[in-house]
Length: 496
Ligand SMILES: Cc1cc2nc3c(=O)[nH]c(=O)nc-3n(C[C@H](O)[C@H](O)[C@H](O)COP(=O)(O)OP(=O)(O)OC[C@H]3O[C@@H](n4cnc5c(N)ncnc54)[C@H](O)[C@@H]3O)c2cc1C
Image 1 (tube, protein in one colour):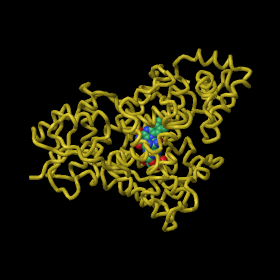
Image 2: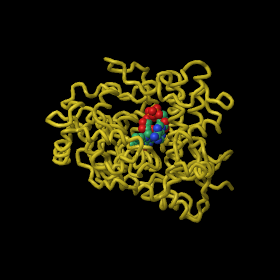
Image 3: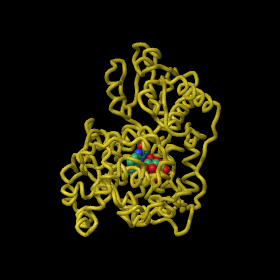
Image 4: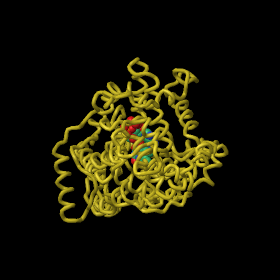
């Protein structure tokens, strides 16, 4: 008799079923997960909708259990009988499955590189410090991705130089073809009714709006989204990857993160299709390299670091930031915020549970870093509020990349800036009540003042960093530094 296989809610694609198996499947919808934290409602909707769509596809093969906890659900589904499961994506879930004698844990799926392979690579690089660029080139090489024999196609590994353009002057949108949008069905209707009921009876609370579902909830929808991106939007992905436009939140980004993280898409098929578009002459090398870098480089690196840095990494706080998150941020109260850039990004999160990388890093994360908010609380906020947020991806991205709480184990410098960066890379400063060039006075940009206050607060640590020494020296040229600091200290935790 075939042993039943347990699928977690982020293991929904065909590659999460054991090879060649057509045996029974167990899925568990655990209410305690939603009860524990106040998730964005669109995220709860997406995950439940995707799980129920998968169950509908599997039909009679699946035993779909709604229970309070995973433990109870598994008992109800199979009693003490043996089950298999692929390596889950968080320490908490791994601890759970390892604590159950009846569960056999199979290797992880949904990533290009295995844990052992990464560990061997990383241990070999430990002395020099781990660098994403080295890892990425190793992945390109070992997976023969965008390679011409031993050399990168186009003669260069890195096309970042062509991929960091400011938005076209005067443009309100990039004019890229619209991304794929799914059509809701009766499963979504049922999910919405359940969420309404749970909210009404007070058993679960959410933040954010649950508008029409924007992200794929089935393999079929995810493949359609991938196809639309590769055929119509990939060509323009590169140049404006880092730019922001108020009226065009998506620009040429792929919107594939939630599908990849739900396991509906496999990263290998995403990068192979992108490479295929380049080989067929349908997309330029800088755009294709930029996309492959994100998926085979960053996504993969983040997954590996989550496990490599260990369980305690999430508690890193070398900058000793302990401020709580203010209510307006927790409640996604974009309307209370006058700084146009932050208000725009927060409204995108409130309305969709998604923003692209630069608003996450240089607006939301940077504001938190400058104000000394507790990095674990910031991680929790991102995890709850983003449709693509899972423990493995949030911990390194927030603790390491965004909050520099690990002191540089993941990145070479803290990612934060004054308003001039935002002004250069977006149209968000036009029409703002603040001025990016001003650091004191009523129109002082909160990012500009916050940037200098941050550098001042951490001067001793940052002046030893080759990439930060120059900006830190800039503090000595600020005749009005005392005034900047005085005003920053008096700011309180109200919305900027
Ligand atoms: C503070 C912060 C929090 C983040 N949280 C998440 C998260 O919870 N989940 C998540 O998937 N990404 C996260 N990211 C990375 C990145 O911002 C999103 O993957 C991306 O914005 C999703 O939109 P997209 O699919 O259109 O991406 P695109 O810009 O089209 O990029 C293509 C793909 O590359 C992958 N990718 C790129 N960068 C990263 C990265 N740093 N980590 C993981 N995958 C990456 C994603 O799968 C993405 O779909 C975070 C970044 C920051 C700075």
